Image (tube, rainbow, N blue to C red; front, side, top):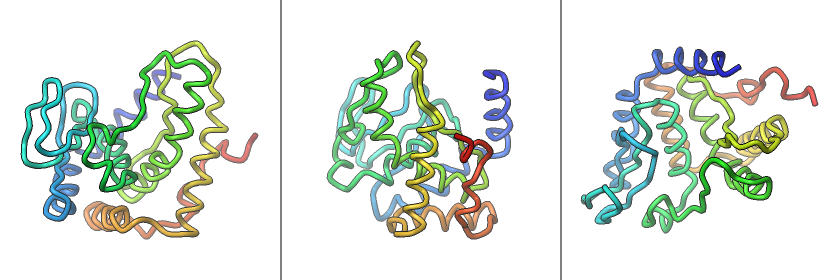
Length: 199
């Protein structure tokens, strides 16, 4: 299973270059939101402008720093930026609560609760880019995780976006990705996958 996942992600990383994602994001948002997407060499993090934090030296623009040049990491971190409001854009990592791998069942439930919306957005922008999306429960501890139930919640949130519409920023990125990758207009049918209704 792990080898299948690695192959799944490796194939997509070869087709989708992080340099293109950086260029698309920065052309779309840098001028209006003073925010750049940046390749990092460590764990992903969001650093507001004029903020010194750990090894990161202050600069005059906001930085979405994604992990190791992975396209999928860039998409995930962008989704959090799209969800966060302008007030949270002034906070390191948007001020979000986070506990790394090793969460207990209660902590995992809280993690999944706050990840439903950004992962729904991530799925949408991945489809707009013609990129693969995989739901991430992001926990390697021994607790049992109901991944299918988590997938259903994310899919339900995608449905809600189709019914109520996307934010202006998300719409702008979807349009930019579709223009670059020459993908078709999004439909809800694009978000079905095997196992979604096999509960």
